[in-house]
Length: 477
Image 1 (cartoon, rainbow, N blue to C red):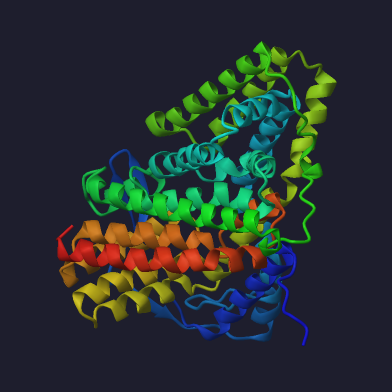
Image 2 (cartoon, one colour):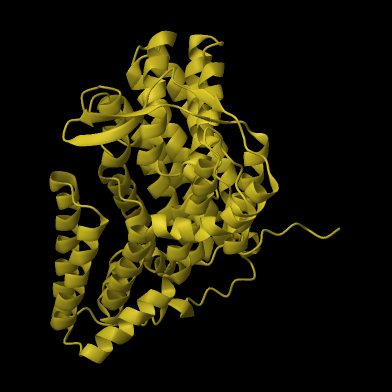
């Protein structure tokens, strides 16, 4: 019997779009009323609780083929709508797509200067007798950046560096990919001060920003330890028995990312890396303090390119050669983000997201408090498949989960925690998560291999999440 093989990521996402389009013919359409609300300096469109109304569907040949608008009715997604979801998703994600192109090119230019290679070899030599200490420091840096600062998609361009580090220390491609992806997603889940999850959800839930940090920091420590143990356990196993590698047929030469030749760490390399790190930190600080978005960040990265090229003494032609190489490397990761967005497009156009939201929230009202709180976790996990944007998910679900938690006698802080864990942990496996799929495409790891590798850890961290929710309910968190 021929083994099932998950197809190329673009084909895989396309079939998910088709499947979701078919669901719009089966799942009733409906919608909540929405209203504009001010949350501090932000004005957001949020759902009005208890306002859900089912909308009759318009079934016709025209609606099935090329769309048809009928007042007072919704139409299932047509054949044309299914195909159009891809360009619409790319258009909706255009800023993020071009941001990924630009940031990928920045890292490629920095690598072209030789600064990264020289620094990595110096670092490996420094910790040659303590490789696990080096791995732990790198792991915790990524974990903390994700949990405290909300760093996620920005790290895609770092994947070649992590793969090179893995190869240099005698591990495989999957180990290097796990070393960056696991701390990113587990750190995001703990969300100690993550501005894109905990801060937005607490504002909507009308909680003091940053409140409940102590318990989230405890979760941060637990997940940090569990994730690192999982990675190192795999690394030890494949070093002891190389035949146990999850990607046995991979030559792991990293040729697609250019040369990683050993070089001497020079003064100009130090200047380049210092400028890059300080500039990057300043950009992230501006995101936190003055509300910069992807456009402002992209503009700054373009400025960084010019300065780095000047420090390195690169000619215009050399700069453009490295820049265009970066664009080529990021084609698949960047386009995956836009295509994955097409899934949300068909669910929104078929008007079934609110229906899923309504019936899930109604079911939680029928079960005991502790189970209802855990039901919130499962609900947020399911919702993340359909709305993989963390802030978007918060704006959709928290206006409902907040009053629902009041009715159930569950604290709003626990409702926020359920959202954080449900949104974050499922990012490890869901194929609608554009960032995950972009990272997989960048690293050269198939989704099938990744799912097989990570599924055990996903089950463990989800069980821990259930335990954390029970603790939160029992202690009145």
